[in-house]
Image (cartoon, rainbow, N blue to C red; front, side, top):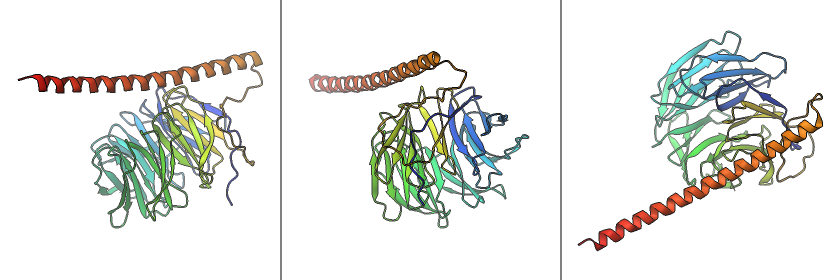
Length: 374
């Protein structure tokens, strides 16, 4: 049975503890824990119970770029700009094992559904597969010609999909280690990719501001979304497979209805680029992180029929002790910051256009000079 459509998602909790931009988030299978990584080189492990203490895991020597819980929740993988992968036991001790094989920043870590394998992606242009229990590097996939930003196993573990700055998405057969297909429709770096829960299609996000959905059996482009005004940095499928949430540098999150092929909600929770987003394994919540140093923003997805809305401004639920006047003032400030962020984004776009025109003028001038010079 398909999960009900989300009704007006509203901000439930901020998790504050990181000292720099949040790069990645992931929920444990039972949704009791939330892991986050940051430019501050730390992992944080948060408990969904409001009064529970958060754990800070220290070990990486540089920014943490990716986190992923194993299906059982007994292990937590992370990748870093320090070129290493770490496997943590997510408890108070925070013990970890270091995997070394990449020669540049590790951008992505993802456990296979059986928990036996781990796939990683790196700026060294490779995708690598590891045995988690034997703690051993198995093999590399090496056809990308630029940084690989993301790699994921299919739900059945037979396929791997990867996204790269070479503007391609590649589909690999894990057994034969061959590239099955390359998707080349994106106009810029591909930042993120993931399998639909059914395993029949993939969704990819790009710096060309778009999200594309392909069928992995026919390799046909199924859906194309151009809804963000800046790079799309991450996406996550709802476990039902009916919805997709995206995070963008335009500071918004968007929830897409894949059955109808349309936008459901635009959420304005972040005051800077939204860098990461993930649905919980139950589909009850999703979390996002950004460079506004507000590490996690948790949104409940309550059951209901769901009203179609083009844009819903997400605001924190009002604590009982907070006066209404203060709430109104804060809402006004958030609104003004949204306008300011959008204005800066427009100015950046105009500046880029001006730079392009100036470059063209200089090139034309050089050509004229070459022609007139005897």
